[in-house]
Image 1 (cartoon, protein in one colour):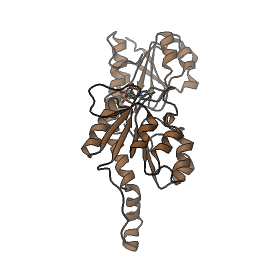
Image 2 (cartoon, rainbow, N blue to C red; image 1 turned 180 degrees about the vertical axis):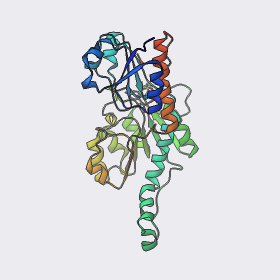
Image 3 (tube, helix red, strand yellow; image 1 turned 90 degrees about the vertical axis):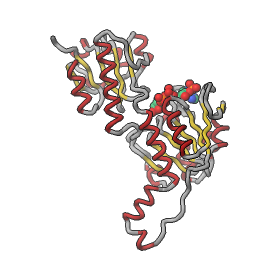
Image 4 (cartoon, rainbow, N blue to C red; image 1 turned 30 degrees about the vertical axis):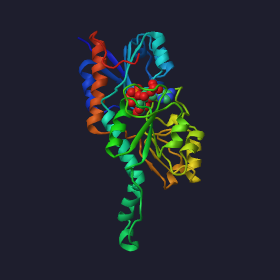
Length: 310
Ligand code: A2R
């Protein structure tokens, strides 16, 4: 039996591609270079991991049935266009919660204990030449505000509590049965916390949510952590305030125009910068890939999808 065609729009780990190839004939193309004869017949798309599936692509694939996206955030998949056409969309929630939470704590520890700078200090021979590195700060006893107490946010919150931090949160809704105090107003929460941890989805409703006003409220002693999407933060305002010492520090895994990171930001000492590593461990990427494959396979077999967003 011939395997159905699958259009792979993203760069996937090799084992995930091999798993797809068990059920599908995989064709790798970018969104702007899909061969016309393939576009006519393709029913399955796999994307995510930095790539998307825009309206033009969805509308240009007349037989498309499902888009499997690698990652929990699916802001680069035009879900509205998919819904209009009755195309299903899946993502990979939950399997990355622990990893993203761990990377969040790693970023926070790196920023307050100045771990990258201290490491460089030793490597550059400065400890021997110049003596002690100097004093830093710690997380214990500080207050953290989580923007987006969802699946990942809750895992971050429990780890922050293990560090004996006080945790509060902001979202559109107060959640029942949560031990953490709720703030209906984000700027008010930013004023009251030492750390603002951003872990809400990238979407039109969250674009620029961490505005200049919020960053100013966080203030010179405050630290911003963004492990969500660059689009949530007013990046130019953040850079300006960090440069002027009006925002204490930032630990960032995500940026407005990845992989571009503004030169002014890269020059600052009060930031820790990661190249979007939140879910980038062997174990978690394998689990994410497995979930993409299981969703597409379920659709092929007429079984219920495991994690559908449309
Ligand atoms: O707003 P609520 O109460 O539905 O809470 C959700 C919150 N959230 C928002 N908070 C404030 N303003 C908004 N416009 C807004 N939209 C959503 O974000 C919820 O607590 C949280 C999202 O939780 P989950 O849907 O469980 O997402 P998960 O798996 O934790 O991942 C979050 C994001 C991904 O979309 C990726 O962009 C990133 O983490 O890696």
